[in-house]
Length: 111
Image (tube, rainbow, N blue to C red; front, top):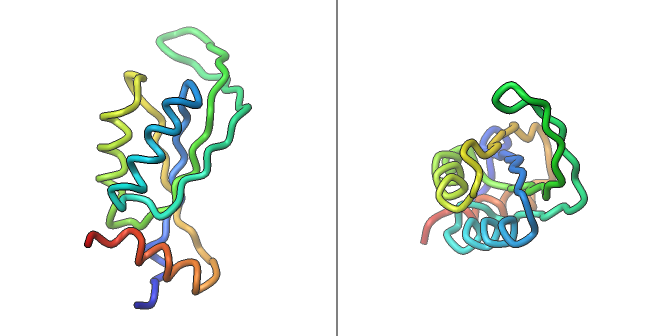
């Protein structure tokens, strides 16, 4: 199976804490919605919410998936994330090693 570069995506999700991040990451990988999720602690976010500027510590998820699984990733994050409006932002991966992209495709294909 050869991966298509056009299909690979990186999804950014911020979480309020490590426990939430780990729960989401494990669920995404267990359900083959993501091949890999990196959990990056130590993030501080400054944003406007409901008319106020907020500053909060957060944990960043870097979710490696395919375009075909984006709706499922967003649904799973929405179901497990405590925020009213969780950040789910996907970007196209324009390049990568063929072996890694093949693996990503294999691991995000339902069995």
